Image (cartoon, rainbow, N blue to C red; front, top):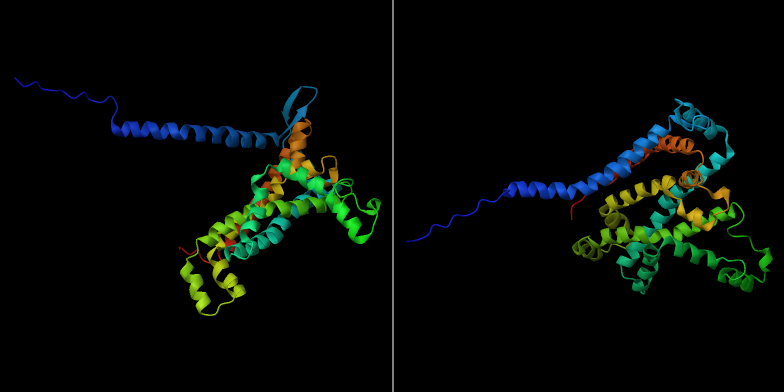
Length: 311
């Protein structure tokens, strides 16, 4: 007699297993988003309407008092104006110095100029090294006693070391040095993005332009830039956010110089030193509300210059 084999019915259906898998995979990023973005930002917004009461030993509601103080300092405080000027200077550097240089260098690397492999390593190296190592290296280059830059200047121009400026000590020279560092260290990331975009351009378009006698400048202006414009727009917008993000550069290069502080560094110092957390939370939120619409408007205007092209 033949035996009938009964198949055991699975506890969970295929659809249920798929649902559980998706839920488990999304649980971690969603939890992280809720805790480190949602909760932190909501708590920061709540802080803008509070002030710490030393008599009660807790934060108390003060309404719009912090916003009034912020607006008053923005209009009258010289230190606040200098902090904003320092922060905004990095927007100018990223958008109008680093980005154009990155486009040119990316294009010339794409054209495989002589020593292009060497220059590719030189540009990319600062992007993979820790910022602590980079700032230490940069500080050593301009060290007053052992730095090679001072040695070269004194040898070539026959000047005494004492006559050279204190590169990281006096303002505004210290601010200029931070900007120089940002240019040196910031090219690699942009070149990485732009080089990837340029490499995706079909070779047929480049070859057709060469057959038609298109020069290097025309090729860059009329072929390369329009085709990689979405990447340029994204990089430009990222440069605009530098006003809110630059912190480590002045912290590591000029740790004891208050004249080079930025918005992000001021917020960081207020947290570390247990200072006016509510004030800087209000200042950051106020400037974010002012800057976000401007950044979105600029992005919208840039996206209209060239239409997106699929290739």
